[in-house]
Every structure is written in C-alpha cells, then in structure tokens.
Image 1: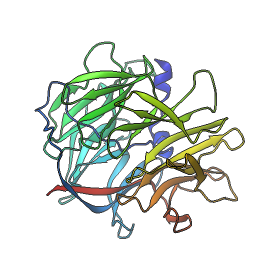
Image 2: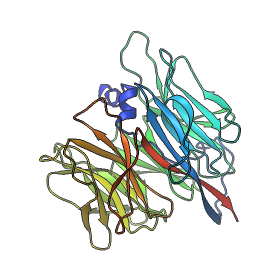
Image 3: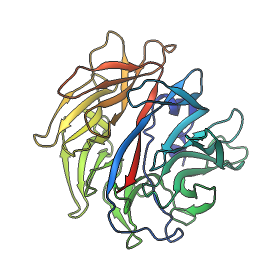
Length: 370
C-alpha cells in the first residue's frame, strides 16, 4: 500500500515530472448506456495546442493556436487535463490550496468552469475523457483520505458523466485496485493496471468481459488498436525496463529497441504506426533522453540535442498528422528555470526550443463524424 501511495504524493512534483497524463477512457462496466460497436468515419480537425505553465508551485492551464501562437490562460492550480472528443471542453484536475483536489470542466466557447467531482473525503487524479462523442463520460482515479494518516487509500478508477452524474467504479469490489486507464482508438476496449496482481487488465466493451494480460507497465495503443506497446520491467533488475509489443489477438510479446542496462519508458506510438517515441535512461546517463524507434528495422536513434547543462526530457507527444514530435525538458542544474517544450520534425528538421515556461503539451483535436 505504501509503495502505491509514494507514487502519488506531492501533487506539485507530479506536475513538474510531466505525468503522462492524456489518456482516453470510456463507459462504466455494466452501468452506462450501450456503446455502438459500429466503426465511425471521422474527420480530424486540429483546434489548438494545450499545455501547462508553472508560474510558481502550481500550474496554469493554457490554450494556444496549433502553431503555439496566441496563447491564453484557461485555469489556475491545474495538474492534469483531458479534452472532450469534439475539442470544445477540457476536464482538468485542480488542487486548491489546503483543500482536496477536484475535477472541473471548462467550456472553451464560453470559458465557464464547472466542478463535476469534489469530495472532502477523497483525492482525485488524472481525468480522462471517453473517445465516443455520444457518451460524455470521464474516468479518474479516486483515493480515500484517511484521517490522521499521511498516506492515501489504494487507487480505484471511477467514472463520471460530463454533467457531474457519478457512474461509480470502473470495476467494483472491496479489494480492487486499478489505475492508468487507456482506451483503444475506437473506444471498444480499454486497458488498465492492476498493481496487486502486477498485470494489465483488458476490458472489452462488446462482451463486457475482462482479460488479464501477462504484462504490466506504462502503455500506449497502436493506431489500429490491435497491439499495445508496454514499458515493462524485469523483476529485481534496475535500469532494465524494456519496450514490449503485445499482440492482443495472439497474446504474444516481442521486445523492441532493447539495449542492456537501459530503462525505456513513456512510449508513444506515431499516428502512422511505423515509429515509437520513448524516453531512455541508462546507468551512464540517468536523465531522460528522447529516442525514436523504427519498427521496420527495430532500431532507435536519439532525438534530444546535447546540452551544456543537465537536462531531463520526458512526456513525448505526436502531432495528429505525425509530422511533429514535442516533449518537455527540465533543466536540472537550475531549479529556478521553468520547464520548456521542445519540438522536432523527424527527418526534416533539428530539435528546437518551442515554448518557454511550458510542459505537458498536447494538440487539441476535434473528431467530427462524416
């Protein structure tokens, strides 16, 4: 229990290390209305670029044009966020000083902010919006505040409608521990972590059945939804996290880009499915360096440029068209220097500083049905 709790303490620290925070979620098990299993034809429209800006110890939520221009502040005291499928609202976790955290929505057309989850007995983390525009449901991690105890209760995923109506726990039961829900691109499956059994759990919307996967770690879906890339560790071995491609239909695993003594994490699949961006640490260089791996050749090359000071790169994110890769860079030698967002167009440009005093950047996308 204390091991899980240590992962979550210090909300300001969670912001600065760039929680991989933008995940996609869907309906409550057996509680929410049925989800259509017919694939939807969608047209992708980029509405803007969302990021956090840390002025002091807390972060601000900002929205800019897709090119990073004309940025405006949306909200204060934010640690993580997730946008609605149509790109008109953002659900965010806020941590008011001296109060339990809350989840609120901001309407980007009216700038109206509406709290939807705010309980005195619970801390809430990591809102993540369903990909289905017809089902406005948001998942979040809920942990009990135990009076007189420094640690929180075990994490459990809960669901809430966008109007604030609770849909209850994703998977019910007194001994259930769950966190890190990530939905497939078509919204028909989700995967989450069960830390007690050290496995990922796959939930299928059509059959409403769960399936344990013999692997655990940070996960991202392939664009076609048939595979997962998992940053999976080897028990008892430090600096040995490797990236594993898990084929869901065959239940097979294969390592990619493996280097002995490296710690590879935060994998992000490119929109065309041909590359995976990830962060690598080694014993010689314990600070994060951005790498880009090609699945065709099973080779990876560093993306981050050399720096005269110690820096830590993390939280890679792809543009929707797959042409641009951005990430957060922390300068470790100067705690007064804020994080910044860097970007590169792989194969066509050199990495460059993009947005100063910015972190956790992601493009705001509108999926509209044809």
